[in-house]
Length: 209
Ligand code: SAH
Ligand code: MG
Image (cartoon, rainbow, N blue to C red; front, side):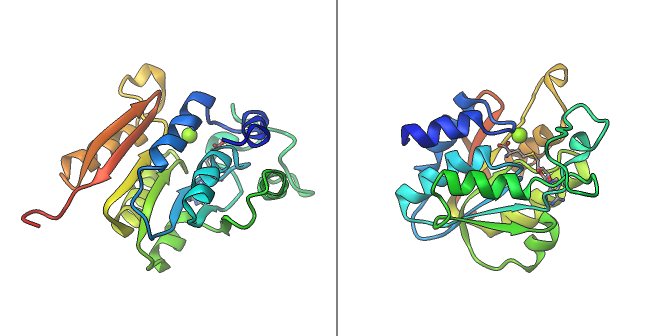
């Protein structure tokens, strides 16, 4: 990864440890060619820089989806609230910071911000994708909506990356782990890698195909 870009990723506000960000880059290079990638959960673009730099190298577009109003834990008074990331009315707004970071990373020609609710965008989406990174809302309902809404757009051989997978509940919330288990149980996906709380799954060929 370009050193200036890596420094920016490391300093950006967000929730992607460097080791997992670099694992994201490495895994992303294994995505099949010819289709764009989707990230759910942009926040300020920390993971977007890692994924976007791999997308640029591969010559594909990365769509990154977020309503930019923050998850439950980002709201004022909550554990992961950042008082720098609010609009004039005091509502969480990560979009201006994300845009500045994306420009600073010189990734504006590779990354397309989609601003809206993930499940609404997924419903209207029809383009096959080669890579899906799930890192949005972590309630069970939202994690399920994101998986159901987006995973169906992955081509055979496409990569499903899930963040914040904690098999031990003492390490963190369970919904991403539940989604990971569902994906494996469905036999539609097989695990091909793991780093920290990042899991890398690949869409298997259809049964008999
Ligand atoms: N990938 C980021 C962290 C994402 S935090 C990083 O590397 O730092 C989770 C993000 O999901 C928040 O920005 C929140 O606004 C977004 N989010 C939560 N629920 C959402 C929904 N239903 N639709 C779109 N975005 C959502
Ligand atoms: Mg995360």
